[in-house]
Length: 483
Ligand SMILES: [Zn+2]
Image (cartoon, rainbow, N blue to C red; front, top):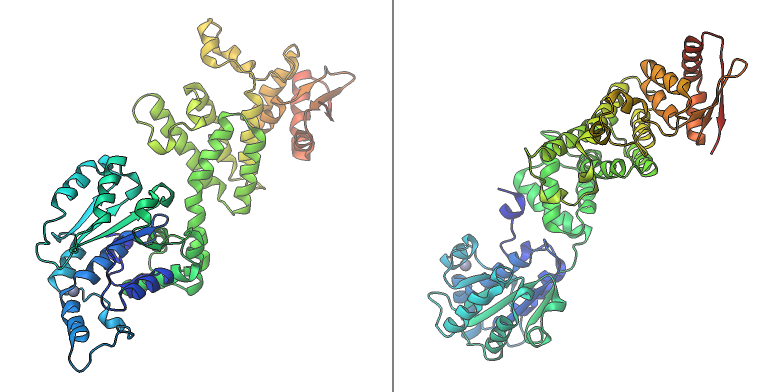
């Protein structure tokens, strides 16, 4: 069972939000709360539903009723009007049949209505009809209405009528994530409890309950790291704790381990962003993503694997074997054609191979981005070329519009360089060249980045060797930065 459900708070003291705890203790501290309607407001994952069930127990717990009775109605411990009940007389016992059936969700007198489904029409109509019936066994009938802001106007009106003259045996607990959508006429009749985003201390407190019960080995700093990642939500906190735990195995969980795991989780997002950049041929964005990955200490080999994996999935979608999951629907990279995916497969597979020898871990991916965004610009898709009957070999050689098409030598040159170093060929595709003159080959690089790549000693050596081989004379390669 997931931690969040397994360790749902069962009494007020278990609630991790201090504000909520104090609010509930204070309302029940005089022993006779006459509140007929509560309104719990705040974002998801902060324990509104758990709190509603606890309130139902506080109101209906059989043992509490007995012990309170003796305090309120007489005996030598009689409570004076100003006195407050001790906490033990407020908390539900969690052992009587009322408490147990509320915990398991089958108490006939505690009705949970989901405002979001059917927008509550049938349920509220039903509620209106049966509201005057006395509870089966409990002292009060409790109506918990979740996502109350989703109710239709009709349902709201029915609810309002009931709240205006509530029968003494009914208590309403309305929960909402969007208080501004709840009519003021309803909100004003309720005792309001605000569930605000949890502080890091509250999140740590909440996780410590789990850590203790599950006997998890984790450092305090690691809990704080998880708290920071939880966005103020108890539900997210316990979810991340659970994920980190499965990642850590039997190791003690440290802050470093949490961050490591978080980076892994972040990969999916980066993969999506990279594919978007590739689909849009946005070179700058692609490079920025690489830069961020370096900062995160990403394993580029692993990252490229994930990219290829996602592309493969996209291919299965394109051929109709898989369906696009909702989370990916409408993403830009869906627009990639099968031919483009094929081409990306090739480029990324080569980049993957090159990660083994890369001096800079990010360079192969950067160069793949470069080759794809530069080399593919304005390229007619292989499909359209084939459609007019041009042999595909020609399509390949016209890959680069940047390389001067009339300069047949340069195209041959690039093809030949590709035999030695594919990435270098990728850079060349974004360049142009002048005809060889007096043993000099001038290559015009479009950016400083290209120029520096080509000027590396390793690159120059390949460029000159290839030029000599093709022209059968001694060639001096010179790189110029042009527009
Ligand atoms: Zn009880």
